[in-house]
Image (cartoon, rainbow over all chains, first blue to last red; front, side, top):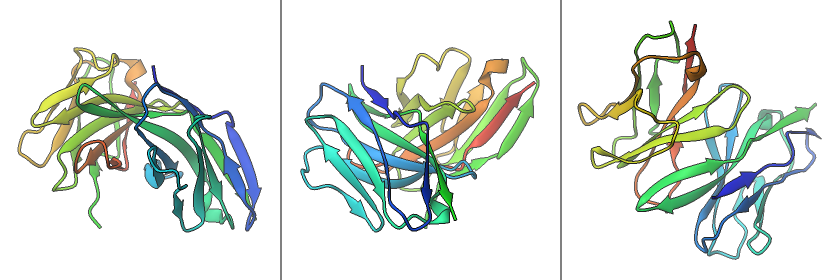
Amino acid sequence: AQTVTQSQPEMSVQEAETVTLSCTYDTSESDYYLFWYKQPPSRQMILVIRQEAYKQQNATENRFSVNFQKAAKSFSLKISDSQLGDAAMYFCAYKITQGGSEKLVFGKGTKLTVNP
Amino acid sequence: EPEVTQTPSHQVTQMGQEVILRCVPISNHLYFYWYRQILGQKVEFLVSFYNNEISEKSEIFDDQFSVERPDGSNFTLKIRSTKLEDSAMYFCASSPRTFTTEAFFGQGTRLTVV
């Protein structure tokens, strides 16, 4: 079964500094998608960044970038120049397809605190 | 920017009562989902829906749960007889096509069963 593991329940970072959130996953598939979602206190799930497994180049969205290591099944999120608004729960997710349907499998999340 | 909207934002219900959670997916999306997040835990898949039928459901989605798209715009989740353990945040999501795109989530409905 596919699983997603986030080994850091909580992380903190100083404003303007860089922080890296870890995620590992387990799958036997060769083609899949990986996502990082942000859940601020408002509880809405907001997509931060996504990575296609067939692409070797790491995805980047402004201050957010990933380090995708396919062989190691690792997908970490780097947040540069951290801002107070980055404080949230961050969920790593893996998208699988089974029998034509789709679902996201989420990790347990990492709570990020940004200190002023 | 189009978004998924969910109503109500918070619902309190007595154990054993029926509840209907409502969602309006993004208008040109074809795939719809319900996820659940028990407080402090991870987000869990409940059900996916495509072409007016369930395409996949998890073991959580038992006979007490049902979904429907009654009028081509709303997408509802019904829990027939709520239990205390159904208390959670319920997220609706939609995506325009299969596999290659992310799901867009609504803001969630917090269900409290007392």
